[in-house]
View 1 (spheres, one colour):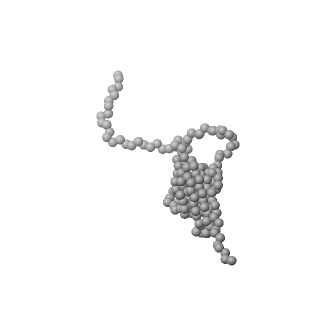
View 2: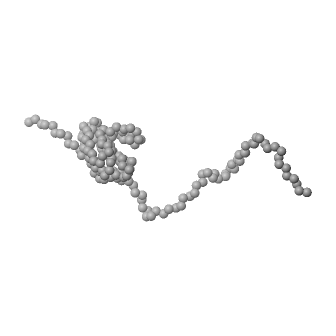
View 3: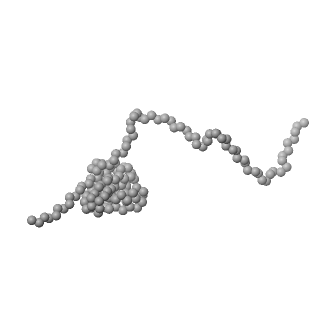
Length: 164
């Protein structure tokens, strides 16, 4: 005799949710496993990675697109300087105090003591209102790397006329 298979008389309207399966203790967590990257051999063994050089006054400095470099200038109150810039692309050239350099770093609004924007050649004149450190900033506005050279000349105070 062949058994007769009968469909269920009613289909349940409410289905209980699936039960969660408890995680076994000490089981590896598959979500944090990552493949181990293949080992790569440097082209030249024991060769240190190039470190960008610090910008120096009077020497060409490469500035990456969208970046800037700054030069520290220590001045006494009343001291005047002339700052010359030559670049092979469009840059912004500013003289900032420490607070405004920090604002520039943070992408906030800042004020410059003096400056030129969107230029390849500029000369800035500045007389320090107080003793302190100031920052000459060259900001690359091009879509490519730019080379810039900055020179600073100390202006001699004008000699006062002497009476004879």
